[in-house]
Length: 261
Image 1 (tube, rainbow, N blue to C red):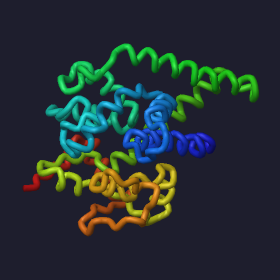
Image 2 (cartoon, rainbow, N blue to C red; image 1 turned 180 degrees about the vertical axis):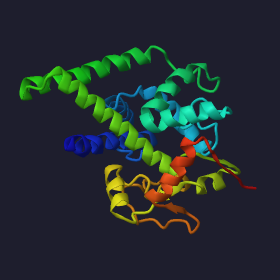
Image 3 (cartoon, rainbow, N blue to C red; image 1 turned 135 degrees about the horizontal axis):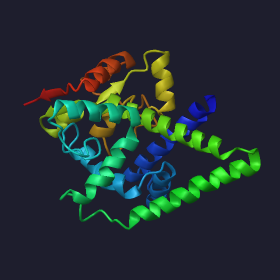
């Protein structure tokens, strides 16, 4: 179980963030398109989905038009919102990407960008990648099929879960009516206040530590260098205890709705 957490989950979240950094082309001297596709496929994601929706996260941050965080838009029914939020929290990024894969072809904003023929190619790559590593594990270490499947299931579930917890710390359950500058300032940041926060930030590569910088200084690769750039005075800083309060409201279907004029 320890190996699932480290290096398992640590590597999973790392691949997720490397995919994100490749989308933004933060390292211009490498083939970002190749690495983006490779990292996406390694975490069993259809590369075209995130590639299409991530721009909406920056343009429509903290609104229901953000197709990355709200792939089916606003959920007006309280009961359905509670069910949806529980599924999102439990299954993490995998839940949102799965929904986006279903909604994108039918969304007028993205229908022309989505290509149905790319999905079976992704599935084929997943089978070769997962099957290849599983077979090598059997040959080298004598791992059984059931052990391989269990290890994969736990690693990808825990990785998807933890990766999305970091995202929820930053943006979860928050809807803001206002100009984009003010919506960007609503981004939360996790203070490295205690041991739990430090361990969480280590496992998630400091993504939520100064995440507001990513939305106010998008072209600057700030995440790997915490403390190098000065945070805005009004940056929202929270602890994991504060996040648990946010999470409890989310699981009860209570949206944190702010109106800024």
